[in-house]
Image (tube, rainbow, N blue to C red):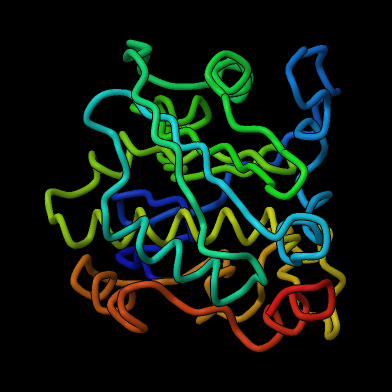
Length: 264
């Protein structure tokens, strides 16, 4: 690879000669003793609730519990595109949202355990008889793994119905508002794809298409669930993300995997 090429790994960017991208690793932490109205249903591993998230058999409805510090609320565009993605790939009714602003945590970075603690403190939406709940934290700082390093993580799926978007990092990468919204939307959809069991992480592969070196990502470089997309300039990055209304689509293999487990 030429030294002036930049890489985008879906949901991580490094603004050097290489743009290094990798989703945050899913947590395999032991279930904690959190006490709430829903017990431990939301304390399982990533991919364990793929069927419940995709089908309407048990939960015809879905609610997203969006928690964010001041000035880090997701954009209307990202939420609209996120809803469209949910309706296109699941059998749910129109998604509903609960937005909760919390105090700034005054941190330069977040460890995964700190995000788990924030969920424990601020998550208020849990499964009911007909609704499955998903927690999304929009962090106002970067991932601990990126601190003083070249890697930049934009999102992580860390439990069966839990994910985080490093909103502070996204906003630090560019002042281009269109690019910010596209990165935001791409990250949300990509991380939800992991909760859906992609790739080979709860959703059985109909055809082998896992990018094994990067784990649980698609080997199609044009797919939403890809691990690596290469560009030589920011302009080319924007050009690539501008395809398909700014956010790449799932490829036929990922769609087939979702349909097999109960999605569309």
